[in-house]
Length: 100
Image (tube, rainbow, N blue to C red; front, side, top):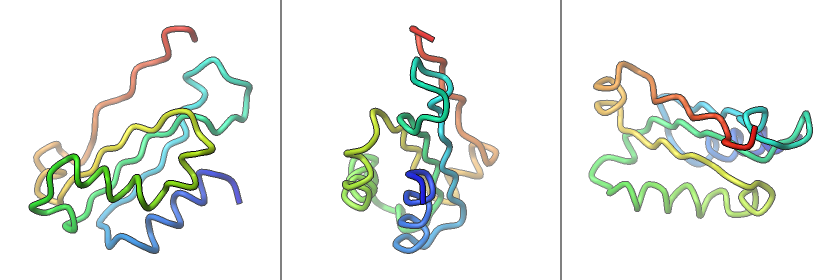
């Protein structure tokens, strides 16, 4: 099982979600082809209701602490269903790496 699959599985098993999207964005960076070093995680869950952004990220960081030791960067987008709908069911695209 690769890192992306491990992240997806852990999130699905531990957070009751409406949507989970784990995107390997390593190709946007100066790393070898096939790397799993940079990720974007979009997770929509009403478990985030009444939680600050910091506490939402702490939940994910604690859950994925083992996987985070294996990667360089991860962008977290933690939204409630209402927040997700306000954003038309999407998050902003990540920029390309400056060195890429």
